[in-house]
Image 1 (cartoon, rainbow, N blue to C red):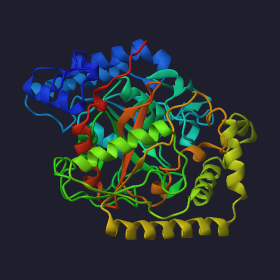
Image 2 (image 1 turned 180 degrees about the horizontal axis):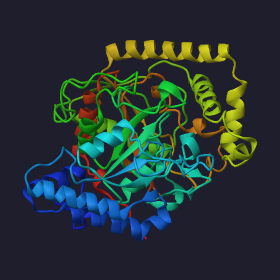
Image 3 (image 1 turned 45 degrees about the vertical axis):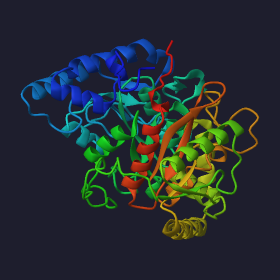
Length: 473
């Protein structure tokens, strides 16, 4: 680990903010930074399998263009020259978007960018490639019929989490400091926690999405980064309305970085160790308890209290599995036979829900949203573990010996806040006895994204967990 205030010697380990500052001083070249990231990928990704598309020649050409802009004093935007990756659910011009599925024909014209991808390009980010996802992004771990199993850089026998598992693994391993992921039930926060990086899901609609997700308004787009500052930097680039997204919010009135250094003094923080219904590993619980103590030391008024709702898993699964069934309804029998078997079963469940079931799930969702709105009149933020466990065996949907059914049984802290569309972030807050990362989740009321980022940044600044890197072999 580097001394406090020092930068790592390998450019692949620099943050986006560090790189941009160095470009501005002309101390570092975007070409050198991009080559460092490509070398890291070429050396270690055969083990991790974070990328499903890698375009080195394109990335180096774009890095050279960025270097020319910086030398001329005309950077294209806040992330000009920063190596970045895109999850393989997001359309990316020139590269296929196969979503981890054999059911999608790669031989077609790929001429459209999703909104966040287009904005990264416009801002000069160096797109390196696309990161892996479970098939159609449907579950909380990352393996699929096309690319196999994506592994955790901290221990390749363990899962990276999902569904943005490739993105989180890439960031943790120094295979690009910026990664765009999606989060429909925890899919930036689950792998963020398991891989020891930052994953942020902003208020729904803050980051526009196109094409519309089959999972409807559960699905958010969000960044995975090494630091909170980097996450805010990316949000400044990718937020704001897009005509293709009917649910996109208006452009933010200020930079997401503007409030990052605000004091936490007097902030009303509710700390719920288990939301009132979740079982949590003792090592995880102890790390989160210590993290909450640091928030109190920083001036927050912390109260141990549950938000008071029952596990909304039925409503989430109704909406989620129905979405999976919709996403696959056009497939032939041959294509269905090639699906991830667990996804195929989820689709069968989804087809069994009635219209009345779907409306009931939405009613429960709305009631949960109202309850959380009232809760946040009393508390500025809610703090929980991000995950009740650390990363488990790679290649399986649930841990060995786990009594719950499916991935939703071990993600109780994430999917409720997709139902409510609230901003939520995970930041590293410690490590297990076996050396695996543990995440702290900070949740805010809708539209309080900067407040969430501020608290996460204050905690990050008071600790050094984010500076630890996996030893790659």
